Amino acid sequence: MAQTRNVVIGMDLGGTNVRAAVFSMEGALLARRQTLMEAARGPAVGLENVRKLIEEVLGLAGSVALRGIGIGSTGPLDRARGTIQNPWTLPTWKDVDIVSPLSAHFHVPVMLENDADAAALGEYWQGAGKGVRRLCALTVGTGVGTGFILDGSIYRGWRGLHCEVGHQVLDPNGPECYCGAHGCMEVLIAGPALGKLAREKAAAGENSLLWEMAGGNIDQIDARTAMEAARRGDPAALEVAQHAGRYLGLGLVNIIAFLAPEVIVLGGSVMSSYDLLQPIVREILERHSVLMPSREVCIVPAQLGDNAGVCGAALTAIQTLPRAGRTI
Ligand SMILES: [Zn+2]
Image (cartoon, rainbow, N blue to C red):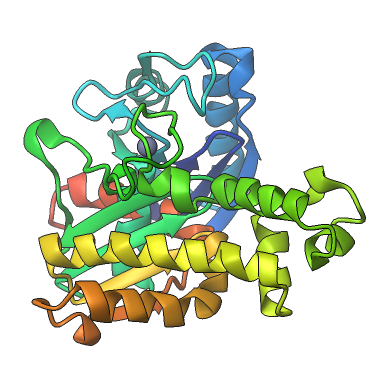
């Protein structure tokens, strides 16, 4: 008979999808699955989807004993109370306790973390920041998430607060963000912001390649279209890339000035085009990061892709277990 293996579950809970993966205590990924959150149908449906997903992925992992669950979730959230309060990306989710029902059902400790912190911890454990003492991870996709890992642990603010570096203000005259600020990093460089800017550029110039790539339908132009058109030399799309590089660069200037990390890991869909933005980012760093040795900071692509969140969340679960019997 196969030996029962101790495992933890790492989850990545987002506005659209929720992912779950089973990890051994040594960090081997044994099974992975995802489903829709259906957040708009209310927390009861969402929680039921999460519970079913955990049971399903455990079933795929073979003969295992569950020891803990770590959840990296889109924030804001209250770690101490185990509640998610994010009506922006999880409509109807206001002060929803996710920890107690899962802990009661599966009889294991459940840890709740911000998803950007979980992704940063994942890259530290198994990805591009393996073993780095001061690591910053920046995820640029639908939003901008940041996490800072110090000596293998998530850096937390007062009351355990997650630091919202993605909402640092880079242009007070910029567009308004859902957070209430004007010109914060997220509203300047996240995917939706770049898509909007590309549509504005396309509307102003009929000859742009953006039109051709979108089949003549302006609504089809998004950040990905813009980055591809920029790669092909389209002037309007290059302006979008210039904008993204400039504000990403300014954000990094601040991150380096405040935290002086050895490594900055860039992940998320927008950062898959980082090679396009890199010359502009480097120029901004040269000009605005004079007192810091920013040239020596390694700015590297993330390695774990979609698995960063589940991986880091699993590690938060492992870190809560008694040291005896674990290798990390
Ligand atoms: Zn904001």
